[in-house]
Image: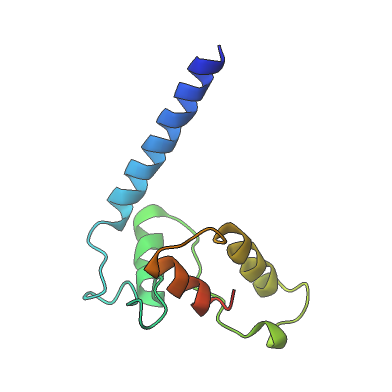
Length: 104
């Protein structure tokens, strides 16, 4: 029973990954949808809008305001804190650049 549940979970994750790859196809730095690692990685406002149109999603751009200027308990502060916690283990070049952009 546990093995079958585990296999089902892995297949669901695989399906989600495949869907995400399809949604991101055609998005590149050259088209202005993604930032280079030098400029902080992540998606631009144009890229976020394009992704949301394609998927009906509700992505938002990075919270780049310094933590000292954010109101404690505000939505932006919560998003930043959540992103920093989720991305703590990112060790790749793009991940590190994104974390710097979010002031993590």
